[in-house]
Length: 193
Ligand code: AMP
View: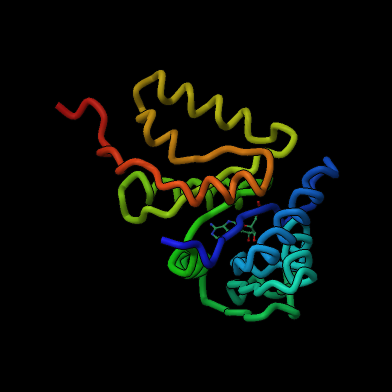
């Protein structure tokens, strides 16, 4: 399936390392340059705002989906191509997941982690086959990957499901990998018998 829309999860804070903002800017610009629509949580704060501004500055289309109660807190970005206001966090995630052809996580906190883990659990249940990538800026995601290695070693996670998360430090390389088709998903359950 050709990529048209990429959903990006990222911090609503800018983070301490300036490399995070640089990566958000680079990814936003690259999506626009490749004619890919950016989907995200519609915030105008932190890495979210930097990402959206970069995509818009590059002439890209940006769709944001935000629950009503966060419109003021996350300062909903009012300059987007399309802004959808929904009733709940669950609706936001479902809408973004439906619209997206692929998912990327930039550095972020609990919200980002929750969002990328959720779409990965849906992939391991074969509810979708959309690629998912971690943009591992400054090694930010290495501790999470070490945790997932432990989960595999403990036979709580299949290696194929760990492999659902594509990991790259360069946005262009990550988008290139999305074009490569992966293997059929493995059955979720381990040691069932
Ligand atoms: P954070 O990484 O914690 O800065 O959060 C990044 C984004 O994730 C923000 O737009 C949060 O509103 C959003 N977020 C946090 N938790 C959830 C959730 N359970 N469902 C949907 N979005 C969430």
